[in-house]
Image (cartoon, rainbow, N blue to C red; front, side, top):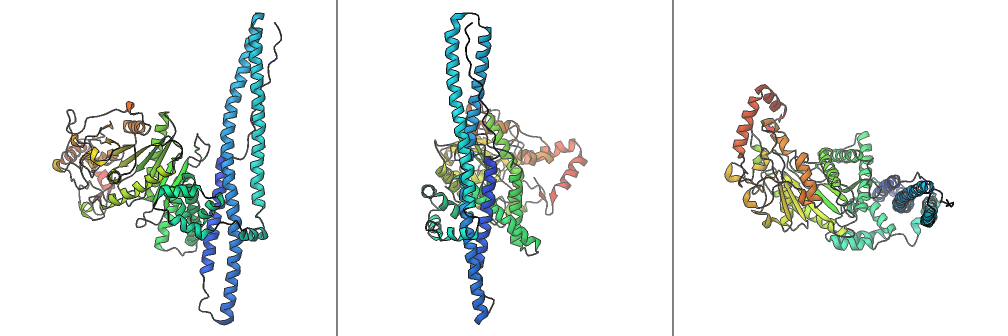
Length: 598
């Protein structure tokens, strides 16, 4: 057999200590320091002499001016460092994707070489030589091309790391900070701030304006006004995440030190507590990476720790909504506040994982809580006081205000979307479904709306609610989902029951839950599990053919217990399973005032 020369195996693309997550953490830490320094600089510039006059007042003024000047140099230096770190993060992310592509191709080529080697060793017919030789030559060409790409990758990695080091070294002395502060190309923050504020109500215009800024201008605004940039609907998700993480780090550090010094006010304590809740929730997923980019999986889209009477506001996404094929946004309901972020976020993560399992494109799943969710319980067996409180769940004003906020948020997602328009699904649970209903009547531009465990909707039919496709999930043993049946024993204060026949929306299968009084609110909280979760994931990924259904209430086969009947039957069922067990549960779950806890 004629000797055929095979190419050598391609050497693996080198490993690197620089990763997208590591680069992101570096940029986040530098950004948090820059925010803190700017806060101190603003404070120092506003500090007046405490009633001093004459030489003492003049000396104080000179000292404050010198101190502010030094801090300004530090600000300028940090802004350059943050910009360099942010650019490095982007370069490392691209290099990581390139490396994964190269490694996939390398394994394919090496496998082809081994396959060809086996065929050559087994061949005895000289007539196969031209074919085998041609394959060997083609593989040699591929090996050469891959080796060239690996060499280029190594050079680009070295250049990215060298550029970062050079940028940081360029501002690591006081003199260099002073030069950066005096540079003619330093961003004009007052002008940029005015332009940013003037576009906050127009996500499309804001997105276009932001895109036209230089990276240095974007970073200067981010470190100067993280609370504006981080919560500005229409700005890119990655930029909002960077700003909000900087604000989060600032708050945790500043209020944490005030706590240590015994100086926290009541309002500040709520801010610190909310910052801690968000920080801890993010930490639970800190080691999870987005398989599409290699970057951190979570993005902090909203961070307002002092809003909504101290309850705070937060929105966190798994995956990047700007680049995902399918985006969902989940609005929670009763008793939701920043302190409940961890538990509610876990449900969104479960949905994210289930949607990814559908394998119908990339997915981003958002947990959104930027409204003042009521604290009362609508199914209060012992005391109806929570229903008549103006801030309670029997009134719609919080849902209406929250719906307007959510509609603006979705407008922002549409404005920052990159590439082909994402398929967007809004999900509202419990009072959050009523909030979603008002967002839909406000024109929120979603493709699908999922209403689960709803106490009522503001329109009589799905068509009257929105042009989007509306889906309903309602367990018959979920008492909250029966509140909309005003004429059948429900309250009806929040609108109509969307699971009823007249609403005319498909009702996907959820199961009914246990018929026991102590399990009723568990049923209400169980939509992000089992069959219900599977069906919501199919809706999110636009694989509607896989959704399973159950009849609407009132259709043939859609029999159900009214709310009074459910409470009576569930109580009787629990009694049958043991009065002592049920009584112990009730004692454990009733807070002062007779409110039944979920």
